[in-house]
Length: 487
Image (cartoon, rainbow, N blue to C red; front, side):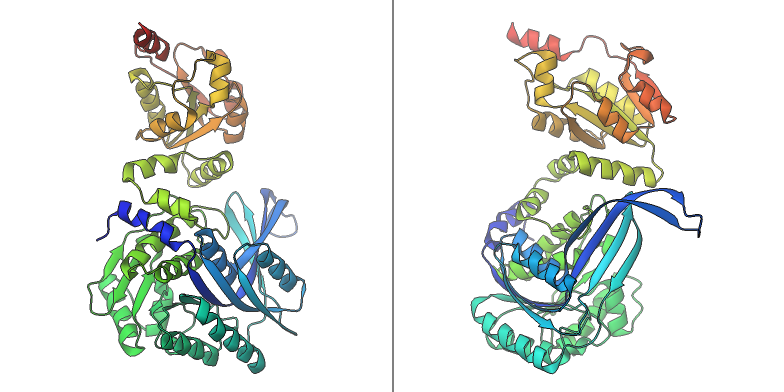
């Protein structure tokens, strides 16, 4: 098995890979807000809208993921002659490195999936779309474009969302044309009839899709493997990669022993589009000549990254590279979050019923006193957030010779501790604003403070929290350590 560090070294090979993507494009719209009351008209939450975003979904999200790892996609799809179709066209045109071929079919409604979100929780999804096969003349145009594009690309993705772009005839024609010139075909399938994908290199059904297509109950790994082998045998496939959510993935390739990959997500915020990421990374890796097992491992790592983000997301080559390095370092990096991501993670923890603790400091040269403080803080809560003074803040507070270690190094050391769940850097001289945003249930400081001297104590009390003064370990301080080193 390829080591993770060796696998990371293969990431660069994905850059420049030419991939043809044919499938159903859609517009993913997200409406974010907050819920503070129930409607007097019906027992439903009232969403106070704060912002809206729109991004490419479906096959469009496959393209976004291909570009994120440096691949060069050729995109073939269909939109309606409507505002959403024009917005899709604009979004694609704004992405560098994509060669788009969008056929406009009159009478077709471009698919829109509108999701309404509060506190990282989807309240409602509203769809607007046409679900019917494209006209024969449109399908013929798509086939000609795809066959011509095969000359300049090294792999093919068929992203089938069942909206009508990938008709049975078009699907068969593209697979046969790709096989004729030795190009791998990666299919994200839909529906019960997987026979339409006969001859493809690899299918990527999720567990439910595999059960539906084979008519089998999939209660354990053995049954999943047997169902996948049946697909490989019945439809002359090269392999099947079954995505199993929190249980990871299973790759069944010919007569080889199945490869079971554990899920790599550290936090799951949103699974929207994770399947798009899987087929995109598989395609880019196979276009670059990687072995299928290595391509599956990269796809599994990328999927673990995107489900930790909000909305229809992508995994960049740099993110995959970082995630593939040493396990301990990855755990530390996962705890070091930027401001918005940190607040989202805290909201998720709180929604799960966890108590949130907070402490803060410079933590320049970590010593036993720091370790004791953090251990006591963790004991007082379920999830401990550490606010870390940024470098500029430390210089203002401690003088121009400080910090000894920059904020990235200090954050990495803190994040390596089991007692710490999240590290957030703040630029102010005090963490008051950050405390107001996080609203911890427990605020922890050393016992050299009185409660009335603790920054944020009033804020925490106002929200029903408490202040805990941790016992100090005598004889340890960063200032003393620096003085000894200077002598």
